[in-house]
Image (cartoon, rainbow, N blue to C red; front, side, top):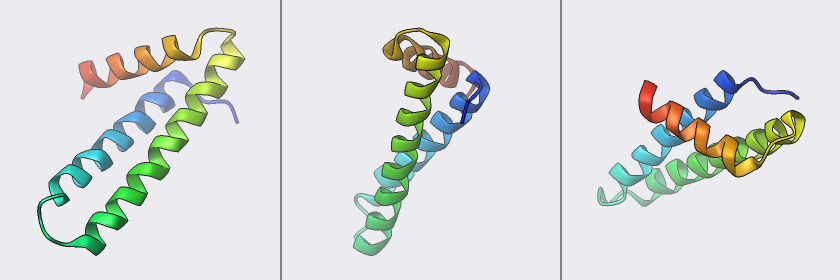
Amino acid sequence: MAHTFEELVEKQRAADQAHATVQALRTKGDPPAYETAWQVWRDLAQDVHGAVTMHAREQGTVRAGVELEVKRAVRHTG
């Protein structure tokens, strides 16, 4: 499935938010909540990785460049 650049930004933003949740739970002493949050983050990060790879392939560009552009867009619009 093709992803627009805007969809990639939204996916990255969701993964970043999930990562922030993991970081917040790291010291809370609630292992089940931490494990669940970590799995959600891992799944979202894998989804972003796959979508960025596919987008780069479809655009005929370098994956790392797309990833960098997506992360810059998240930082500037978040």
